[in-house]
Length: 409
Ligand SMILES: [Fe+2]
Image 1 (cartoon, rainbow, N blue to C red):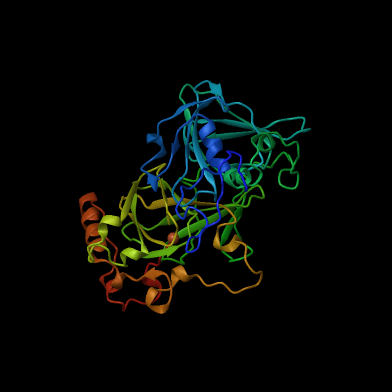
Image 2 (image 1 turned 45 degrees about the vertical axis):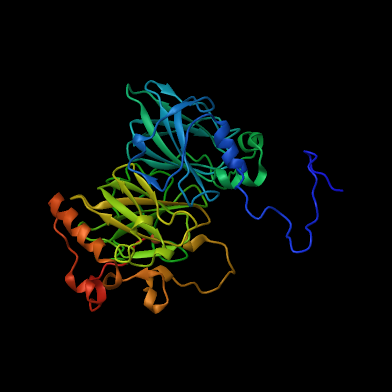
């Protein structure tokens, strides 16, 4: 008779029975176990108003205080944390076999970056709004010489490697230099402003390993979603981790749509909120009395929301309500963006999120959306003293051409 390690007997199912428990609790994956073992909080939700609100605990491995963030729907796809670099202090040196993107939420300081055998450490000076990658497996150390603490938001591909090799020692102590990604060239972290078309979709791409100020930098016109929509995708450090920065016009909101999980929208400027709900609640949950299952996340600078949380395929809709335009950076982790997702090479892909549900797509047109959404948006804008730019024709189904905003992300 077979035995497992605990000596519990396994019995063949009798006639009419099936093997196994049928229902079971989801086990903690290696990355979940790793986060728990780090001794700092793990924040799990659909989003947060601003990461400045999250409680931080002393983090022995890094030498500062921090918290992990694992938004619903991103589990196993990519990871996040915030860490505080103490005033007049520094974090511990580390290197790791995962990619890391850094966004400075508060403060200023520097990062020393180098790889094994490199005689001189390179120094990157950062401030609030700087965004830059730590090249794969490069040594690095964050330093804060000011008299105020600094707060860094980091996105990583740590879940991918932890869930694959399940060995923290290997992840943090591999001697390999990925010199094809990080040459150590003197100008490696010099900011570059040149725009080129990305090789897959032809969208505006900036190949640079440092963005000094993503809050205020110029963004090239995109116009795909509405006149005036601006967007750039930085390609950084040869990463698979994907992100873009986009800005919406004040006074307009995007259509709802649904797709798989992975994108997290991080607010860089302005304020707003997102509604997200499972498609089982219908396209109009307020009208249909199913709004109890709708989730809402408000955000301001440093806030975030998982665009399609849970199992994915949740409808989501984003509303910017401040006088400032809503500027966001969207982070996707590795190999999750539409243009970088594995599949049969060469197959034709359709952006279903840009096609209305009545035409077989995944977007809810304005004239089919729940009236509550428009009403609340208009009321909120009036309260904020912001003029609405939602043309009544959008709700007739007769608005055509360039003037109609689209679903955005
Ligand atoms: Fe989306």
